[in-house]
Amino acid sequence: MSVKFPAIGSRVVAKVIETEGTCTIGMKPGDEFELSTHKCGDFCGLFYSNIAGWVTTLQLGGTFPFGDDPDVQVWECPNLNNRVKVELRRIKE
Image (cartoon, rainbow, N blue to C red):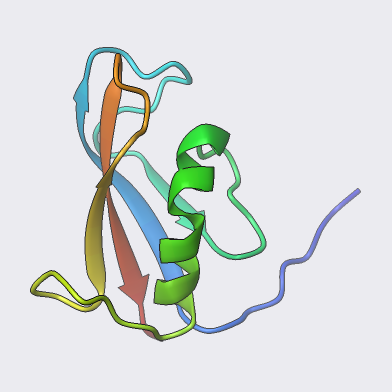
């Protein structure tokens, strides 16, 4: 079945910027994933469940009470043994 996801708000792209150890699903620096309230694609489900609220905030135009750039946030995977750090970026089109 082919699924069509509705375009709502801004696009949000997660880019892997750093790893410590080996990601259990193989994500590596430079990998990019488009995320939204409707999809996480091939992005890690454990990590996505940890950042889903922040993805929604970026997608729907919200801001954060911290950080220098309202369109960018950096988050680390909750897996303490194999850390993956991603940059979430709001893409306004």
